[in-house]
Length: 632
Image (cartoon, rainbow, N blue to C red; front, side, top):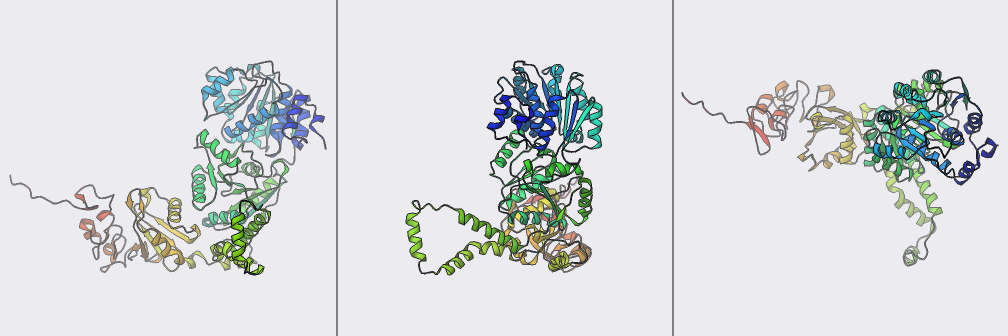
């Protein structure tokens, strides 16, 4: 096993490495550093995320640096601001004993004036995102004609983000005889094309098979129904007290919604995505690194450059579109040789994608089951016992309380005391998971027991326990927001909510019968943006057409007259429908005057009513009085 001393680094750099605890180089550092120090050729280096690529190109770069020269000698291009910040911080640590070295990171979302000021003070190394660098070049702030080394870090992601034209424009500003070092986790055809286009004759360093997954990471997947993915994620979190992870979603909107839902259910989580300002991103990452949040919910782009120690799990709440993106995601765990788990929570339709990833990454994905209630309860009890055994008792601070407790509990035998303690401490946990359904969908034809253990959606919601709520798309609701809203008000889990029918000004939601009354009672006196929310039990259901509060299908059922205009599509039941309402009043009576028992959409909505021929009175709309025409 070699050491950094054997790689030919200067004494000041070795001193800095010793101070930060770097003693043994990683495989990519062991191969790349000597090559970069001796060759005049360009270099392409392939290594997985988390294997120490920054030191692999940063340490040789510092060897070529002249601290007395205040011109720009090296340029590092990275796809995201997080990666820029991470690289610049690492280089500052490596050069702590190399006096006179100045490193400036330039990226969007931060003050360009401050960055210009830092550059004008003199900087030998610029770490930049392509967009902000071009902005500074356009302002004549930067002169790249003195650059000796250009590093393209995460080159594959820069291409995926559409930076190819920007790279061309930037590299045209640099000398032709510069050295170019390209570092990437994958060697796609696009990366090979950029190497041929922007580099001279180059040597290639590869650590591990190309485009492969890191060996320190366990790749796992579970199969659930799509709507159960959130419940499955929570169960994995509950089952591992030491879990510290990142959850990946496909879009910014999904990222924020998932983080909000987790926080609402009592989990320490926060989101990071492109819509956050730099200050907000720094705040979130500061909390995550300090472990005040347990889960970071992120998009692919926002997570680039996140280098946090001891991430135990990466969850793929949505599978990425490309194998390269999966590689970058999973590389957030298993860093620096540590073990990690990359777990994909997928629906039935995504099983083939797992097989495709296995072929592309040349690795095996292990099928795992979503933990059940008994397993979660056991794991939480064992984690509590572990903490209990390791806790240090403050005898002095608790002296008075301990003496009283011992006197009070003296009459119990040891076994009885343990039994009572266990019951008091864990009854809530055990009860919370006692009725948990098995979320797993077993894809094996030989064993369907997992699916049989859990009632189907049709069986669970077959009793017609359906809730009407006077909120819809006009209020900004879609299915995701409605699910979060109902769970937040009622406190129930999303797994107890079934199909939803979201209309413009009202919605229907299937609730499991055992939790139906809990949800209805939770909405007593509820309001949304200043107006009261009305919920009712709706009957009817899918077989009779579109349901209505009080009954009715598309054409029949409902109020006493029934039918299309009374209790059906536009009619109302006992308490009114879409446009109907009133005790008997169907479409026509409610539309024109309905104020009897709830009215309908155009009868008595308290915040929406017809604009012509009606007036608002006592929170309801009613026809305006008609005045006789004046005789001429």
